[in-house]
Image (cartoon, rainbow, N blue to C red; front, side, top):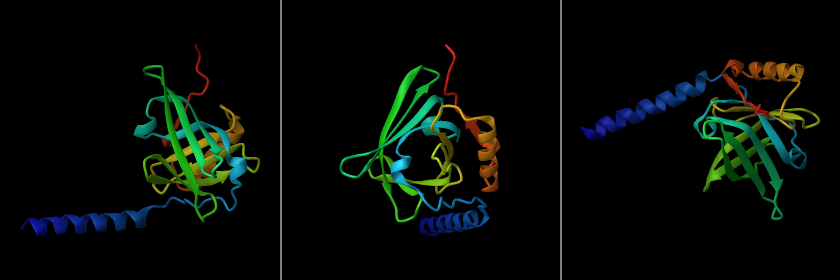
Length: 176
């Protein structure tokens, strides 16, 4: 009897996964060209979808550096506004055969998709997503984007099927 129950649960999970994939209307296509050397450096988090590993963080910044051995080092840092303590996560990224798509890991050998979906031609801002429609980031080289630029990015995000209303805007320049 237990086997039948387990098989039914597995079947329901498979059906749910297949159904869920068919109803997802998010466009996750990556940029046609990504110059990884130009992408290196500091990126300020302008906005993100809420998720547990960054919850409560302000002044969030990601730094990408090419290591001597060709690997990409990633350092994410931010301030937990509740405790005023700095939180830092060290990770690594690797290129994939698909332009604009990296794989990023902050824990052991578990990698996640990092899809650069929109990118300013001067590499001043980027929109990054993942395999899931639950993750979305707007990044910029400066801690604040001009309103006109931000509105343009929000329109791009909406056209891709993301809901811009779900974005949390990250406080980058707190007042003392």
